[in-house]
Image (cartoon, rainbow, N blue to C red):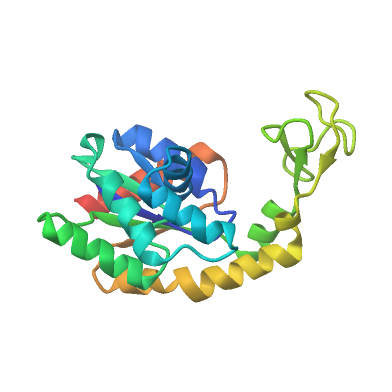
Length: 218
């Protein structure tokens, strides 16, 4: 299957992408991973992307598109893939359609993870990270530390990242509504979108997603 995963920040896309890709035996292709891999390997695309990032500028669509194209042409993606973070806007969605069409391929579905905006804010703004190890993540509501402000694992100080503040989250949501949400209408016109409510336990959301995708593919 060839799937695009969309949803607002805080919808759990990364978590669901990993589970869905494993269940479907297809690679999970994340924009973040693509950038990190190209930059760390110092590919030409990675160097180009870094030159924009170092100046605090957005990486142009054509660079992102080229990275995605290169990854989708790898042998493990021959029979399908799950795209997470790409396409990010309608221009990228159109470029993806052109890429697939050139290879006589098409998308099988676009999975839209729906989460109420207040829940998105609650999920992200409630996160607390350990200063000693960023892999130690807590949440003031859903996974509180035993002692407030202290990491259960190593005793490090827990803090809220600047980009997790409520104000920043709402700004990120506005960017999502303006730039990314229009691709849902773009794909709806092609009959590709399946929307599920991404609330509840991780495994419940995964099961919901798998059922929706199987109906879409039928």
